[in-house]
Amino acid sequence: MTSTARRQDPFTESDEVATAIERERLLLVRCVETAYESLRLMPGVDTSGRTLVWFAGRLLLAHERASARDRD
Image 1 (cartoon, one colour):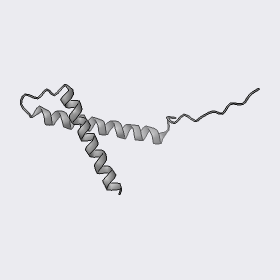
Image 2 (cartoon, helix red, strand yellow; image 1 turned 90 degrees about the vertical axis):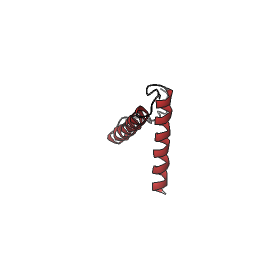
Image 3 (cartoon, one colour; image 1 turned 120 degrees about the vertical axis):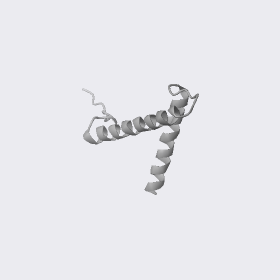
Image 4 (cartoon, one colour; image 1 turned 180 degrees about the vertical axis):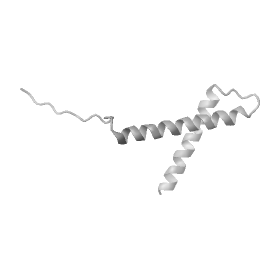
């Protein structure tokens, strides 16, 4: 019989992990929603394409920078 080392799954479901995932999901949803609402008000801008994804990504980065600054 050989013994093999088992590595712990880094994504083992726990209440803490589930809460963190839900928090990130809600942040992403808010970024997409804000981007969509902002772009919708701009004439001639496609709110369902790459512009929406790009703008939501920018909002997410801005949030991450603001959060990092608040922690410092």
